[in-house]
Amino acid sequence: MLGLGVWQMAAGAETEQAVEWALESGYRHIDTASMYRNERSVGSAIGRSGLPREQLFVTTKLLPPRPSAAKELEKSLERLRLEYVDLYLIHWPLPLWAARAWRQMESLRQRGLARAIGVSNVGLNGLETLIQTSAHPPAVNQVQFSPFHYRRRLLDYCLRREIVFEAYSPLERGRGLTHPTIAALAERIGRTPAQVMLRWAIQHKTVVIPKSSHKERIRSNAQVFDFELADADMAVLDALDRTNGTARARG
Ligand SMILES: NC(=O)c1ccc[n+]([C@@H]2O[C@H](COP(=O)([O-])OP(=O)(O)OC[C@H]3O[C@@H](n4cnc5c(N)ncnc54)[C@H](OP(=O)(O)O)[C@@H]3O)[C@@H](O)[C@H]2O)c1
Image 1 (spheres, rainbow, N blue to C red):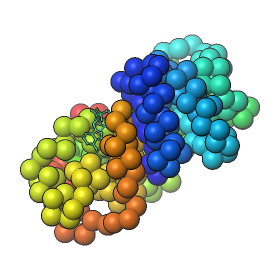
Image 2: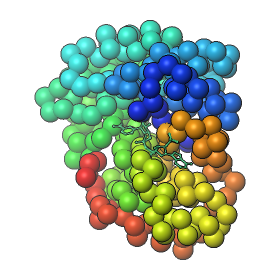
Image 3: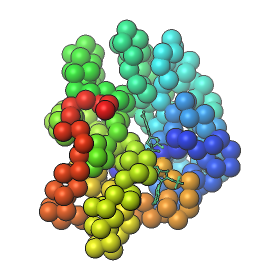
């Protein structure tokens, strides 16, 4: 339900430290991508943690439009020093390429190199097409989601289809934290603005993957399972949406 996102973390010390702090704080889910160029650092921190593999949930992503998903995943696994990933996502679909890539992803799942496969940045129409043209629906759709990007129609569709909805940029890349409505609510209930935004997304039944490179923030961002936002507060946050409840994955 909660993972550490590592986009825009420099490979080496920054990523290794952040992953180490996250694992110490109880995170077991790390969200990386070949595009982030820090899979090796994620792998080192995981290796050093000594945690049993089965306790971890590691996601990486296929960069479009690579011709061979198998070759790309094998390279990611080598960098991560893992025998399988828990989730492999198509980072974003490209027309013409995505249908073939998805078939390759399905075979990677059958080979056990990815426990689950999914997509990212796919709207309702794209999901419908994928479901109609493939043997298995995606397990996950990872999309930007926050009170300012409350994609209600896309979320409802995914929940109805039992496609896990992962909320990326759940803190609006840090920009949502100073919004007066969020800051005032956080102050009133004695929580941080980040905890309020993450809790909002969790109460909408999404998986959240906030990024931070700071120890204290990594720790406090995970403290979101010991309180609940009241319905009235959820409604106030819902009303910050700037997408008009879109079913699209972008914009
Ligand atoms: N699939 C995709 O296309 C896609 C696209 C974007 C993101 N993602 C994934 O989603 C993850 C999260 O999204 P994101 O990195 O875009 O943005 P985010 O998690 O919404 O926000 C990260 C920003 O918030 C700051 N921050 C975090 N916790 C804070 C706190 N408690 N107090 C104050 N500031 C705080 C971070 O700064 P510090 O680091 O300095 O603390 C950073 O600048 C990514 O890392 C990546 O794994 C996926």
